[in-house]
Image: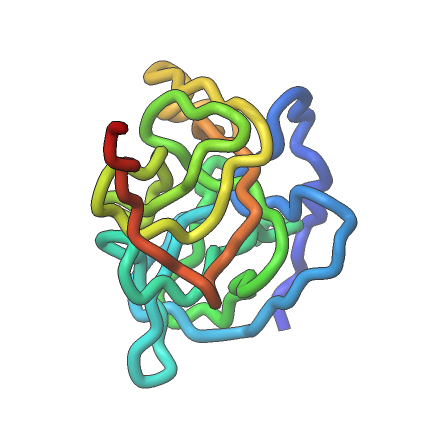
Amino acid sequence: MPNFIPQGTGYVSGPLGAGTIATNQPYVVNTDHAGDVTPFGVAVTKSGNVIAPAVDGKNVYGVTLNRYYIQSWDSRDTEQWDAKDEIPVMRSGAVAVQISADVKAGDPATVGAGGVFKTAADGDTVVGQFLDDGKFNASSVSSTDFGQVSTAPVQLNLGGAYATTTPASK
């Protein structure tokens, strides 16, 4: 068995890191196997007991949680699970997710390319609701000491996913 090095908070302050449990409310987490490299805090689908990043808001199984340890000092900049890792996937609850654009608290959340979240537009499948504002910062997506990305907390609603529509004008 390898010796793991605790990562703690990684000296991060401010927004929660991708894949961090966002509230102290009850939540449900399953353990599944990654078919490929899977970043923290992205939506995933499940097929044949293997998960992979979702490509849109349809068939979202859950959101990958982060790891609270690093395997070596060389791996501390990588915020991802490797292929065939057994990883925690949040099915219900609130979690900090990766975002691809600015979001506002209360916005309906959907999933775009690579399992990254965004505000739902007409026709998108809603998988949750943003609990707080999230500022997308292109410079934070590049490599930092701990691979930080832009995040915002989402309350998942996977059991009742629905498509958005604009109300008709009166």
